[in-house]
Structure formats: C-alpha cells, structure tokens
Image 1 (cartoon, protein in one colour):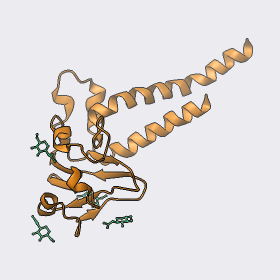
Image 2 (tube, helix red, strand yellow):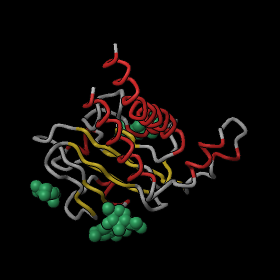
Image 3 (cartoon, protein in one colour):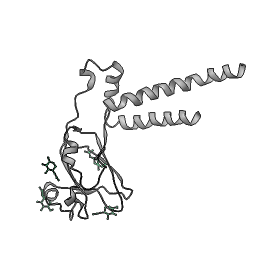
Image 4 (cartoon, rainbow, N blue to C red):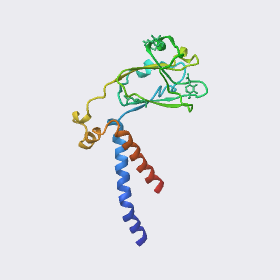
Length: 179
Ligand SMILES: *[C@@H]1O[C@H](CO)[C@@H](O)[C@H](O)[C@H]1NC(C)=O
Ligand SMILES: *[C@@H]1O[C@H](CO)[C@@H](O)[C@H](O)[C@H]1NC(C)=O
Ligand SMILES: *[C@@H]1O[C@H](CO)[C@@H](O)[C@H](O)[C@H]1NC(C)=O
Ligand SMILES: *[C@@H]1O[C@H](CO)[C@@H](O)[C@H](O)[C@H]1NC(C)=O
C-alpha cells in the first residue's frame, strides 16, 4: 500500500510529461512539415504506378519531405531536370538520392518543381514523379479552429520543428521504455 502510493507519486511527473509528449505528437502533423511516402496506398516507389494521379489531391509545401520506399535491388531515386524527366534519361542526374537501403528521404526545401525518376529503365514503366513544391502555407493561427497552443507550435515550423519532433519522440520513447 505504502509502496504503491509512493510509486504513483513518483510516477506522476513522468506520466504528465508523457501525456504532453503524446498531445504534441498528435498535434504536430497538422502544423509541422509533412513526410509523404511516395505512392503510399499504391505500392510505394514501384513500376506501373501513375504518380501524377497519386499526387493529384496533395499539396507539397516547402519544408515537407518525400520518403521513397522501394526494392533496393531493382530501383533507385534520381533527381533530374525537366528534359531528362520527359525523356527518362538517367545519364546525368542533378542529384542521386539513392543511399542503398531502399528507403530514401528527400527534403523539399526549395519552392520549385522537382523531377524524380528511377534509373535502370524503370522510368519507362512509370517510375517518374514530378512534384510542384509550393511556398509554405500561412500559419494555421489564421484558422479559428486551431487552439492557441497549436498556433504557438506553428511558429516553430521549419528548422526548429524537426529537432523538436525528434526530442518529443525521444521523451516518448524514454517513457515507453520506463514502463
Ligand atoms: C537537362 O540536362 C541536359 C544534359 O545536361 C541538358 O542538355 C538539357 O538542356 C537540360 N534541360 C533543362 C531543362 O535544363
Ligand atoms: C547513386 O548512389 C548509390 C549509392 O552511393 C550508388 O550505389 C549508385 O551507383 C548511384 N547511382 C547513380 C546512377 O549514380
Ligand atoms: C536542401 O537540402 C539539401 C539536402 O539536405 C541541402 O544540400 C541544401 O543545402 C538544402 N537547401 C536549402 C535551400 O536549404
Ligand atoms: C498518368 O495519368 C495522367 C492523368 O490521367 C496522364 O496524363 C499521364 O499520361 C499518366 N502518366 C503515365 C506515366 O502513364
């Protein structure tokens, strides 16, 4: 009895911290950068998927991320210019995002159009993705639905937000490990 009540007293700050972390984790996706899994719901980065159709209902903002998940033995992720995108030419990529794990993260940190293809001929099977990156949207505080704390969070958007997200995730992990 004595032990259990003491444990509860000591556990409370941790629980409060974890609750805060959980609330932040839930709130973060609507204010922070979005990480899109390319082709999510259709098979990821793979042949015979139309990425124009996949992207049709999405907005990509400066600060968002693309996550390419694919068969590392077959495909890769190459950023090319418009001409090479149209011709499926992988001979002179602007950037080779392939790291070898079949899981590559690309930061969309410039407001422009990006062109991605898979080399080794897969571009001809539809593995080409043109993404229009728009200027980051205005802070969500303009919307009456958002709470004061979420508009505060939005001011941390960008460079500070990602480390914060990782820090919050680390606290959350620490809490889970404690249990
Ligand atoms: C793309 O790069 C190729 C080869 O370097 C070049 O010939 C072509 O003009 C470039 N196209 C654009 C739109 O920059
Ligand atoms: C891209 O980089 C990966 C990993 O460094 C490398 O294995 C691959 O050959 C490169 N591909 C091209 C087309 O440059
Ligand atoms: C965008 O990200 C790339 C890759 O991390 C980096 O090399 C580049 O400097 C960044 N550009 C800007 C404008 O932040
Ligand atoms: C993808 O679908 C769009 C819209 O229907 C079409 O214009 C485009 O040619 C298709 N792309 C490929 C690679 O099939």
